[in-house]
Image (tube, rainbow, N blue to C red; front, top):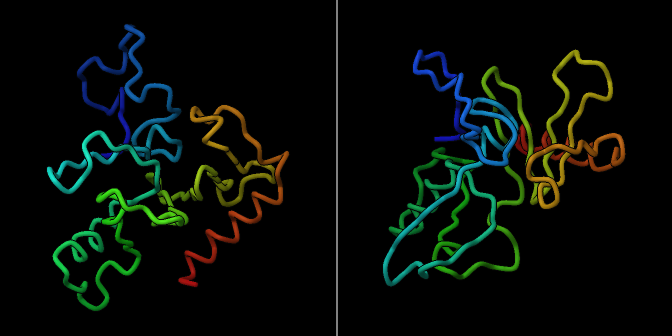
Length: 173
């Protein structure tokens, strides 16, 4: 699942927790949102004799990538039209990462259909449709995992680059 939630509508008292517990640690946001606290989840895999014990890799993968990975694992092609956006990360699991990441970019979607795009350690949350100009959010997650410093005004070229990449991916280019 993705992202923790402290108040999900259930009357369990979690929304009024005053213990200082943060269900997403240093990450901003909650389940269903576009900030890392709503989307970032570790992938933990164990396969004795195949996956090196204790290995850690910092790569983008999405749930959809499990399809291509499983197909490669059993040496079978995916059926035509199945999981067209899936990219295998089997080589990463087996400790044989290439010089290029398995996935260059990843689109994140929040409840309500809003999108964000991750490319490496960059993240863009475009302003909602109809919002005033200048409401885009750009973060460099390597330096700002908590998404506290919006760099959009300082780096408008990076904002435009990521917007173009998002549009290309959405259009299937």
